Image 1 (cartoon, rainbow, N blue to C red):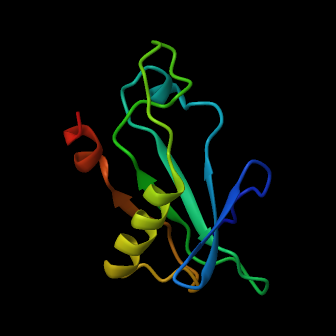
Image 2: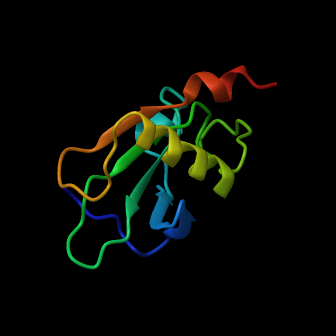
Length: 112
């Protein structure tokens, strides 16, 4: 159970619940070399205690990759769709626990 850093995060409301989401500003070594896709994290904004974090694998290169490959921006609509998909797969953002992994890389790489 680890809370997201507030600095650099964005807020989004999905189905009446407020969330905070964040993309790592600097790519990891593996992301920098485009060996692994970009990821972002989402958590519910809960005043009492942090819940389970959602880690979404996007399927594209990190925008700050070291090879100069193009990357699309992650839009709030993509984040909202990821939250809804994770909720339908059993993610409960209020309960404490290990991060919930959602892999959406197949849908992103299939797009032209």
